Length: 592
Image 1 (cartoon, rainbow, N blue to C red):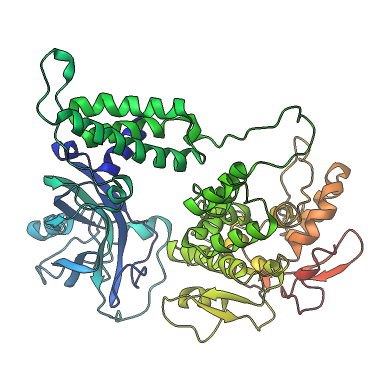
Image 2: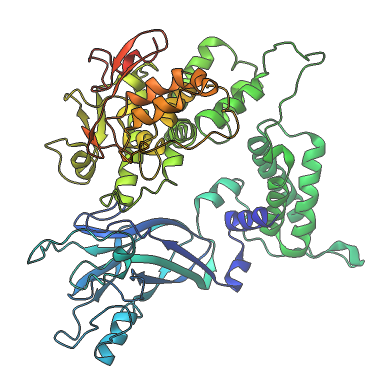
């Protein structure tokens, strides 16, 4: 109910939103390095920061406040030199701030942990240098891109290069002479709201031209209405019916019934009499958004269909199609075909699928369905051990996810075979990811398609997203990787493991380290375990040349990596190459 009320008020631009200010804070992940341009919504020549798409409910004045990144003892990092910080709305600069570089030569803290403090004014400055990073600006109602980023001024530290700080040291190191970074952006408002303005949602809702009508008098008090009021009320009722019929058809994914329309119009009339035409529409939309017909995808089964396969009707097919490809409701074209019972025709269905895949909304097929299927979502929650993988940070995680997203999008756009997910000889990388993979000739933050000709990587199984999501924080997990291939790619998941499975033995009885293969060989000596591991383990071991963050390796813990394996049917595989062109490659998984 609360969400429905909030959404409906934002959609119509309820003027009462101006009666109270709202505060929204957008935070930047602490592990995100801000030494490069971080997105297409940020200007060229910038570094770090963030860009957000923010819904401004009303035209009015809004306050924007930037908080800078601090280390664990609350010292702001990177204050040793002056740096310019820009706040922009839709790419237009609103304010340029300068931070850092103050009180040069003044004694500073010696320990950066609060124990031995520096000169009092400078000490206070290092804790509150961002206190003045606030500005107010007039913004029109609707969605706008708000960004805060630094002007890129390249620099190089002097002296002996220091190792990258990890774990606790990463937070307690003040990074005095390094780069400042944005921690959060807070947007407050509206102040002195001037109205909803001409927003996209209002244009879609108020299609018959009536808006900002004054409150009508109630006729229940016995007095005579003012001249022309009945005509105005009738016009509003006709307009409301057209608006709500159109919205209900889209929301319910079918033509609304007379009873459903009567319910919505009842909510409209009650609110319109008290607070005006737009308030009536807002109330009806709020009611529509809590309807189970909107919240749930309801399919109507034919009579006597239990245990019998049947074709879903066209309206249900339209909903299935739109939620799968767009993660949203059907558009007017799809609904019109479904209402005429034409969508199920093979030629029409093929044409509509092609049209929908060309639409920008089809990106959700990757971010939603493929993201869940291939583990992109799971990769967001994986945190590799910083003591073992100090080079891992949020930038690399984002690069992994972007690579997989662009790769799957390219597969869909080109209508490639599903087998190409495993055998493709290309991927998408930027400079950071190329360096991580050991690829040469890629510079800059822009992702671009590259051909993988080194015989090492290929397809989804050579990408960091999958390799990291199927590993433990401190090591690879051949069983997890093998299970993932069986379940996600081949559709042949093994049964659940028996209870009370013992942990793997990592060392021998005399203390010598065991390779992962040796650990698993001991584990398979248990007959209850071997029946499943004989299928999973070869798949996982063939990927052992990739560590827990997707880097290629030849040794692990000083022991040479053996990525060879034999499938249950006797087919050998050499995991030293994960391309379809290599003998015994990952492309033969299907045969195994």
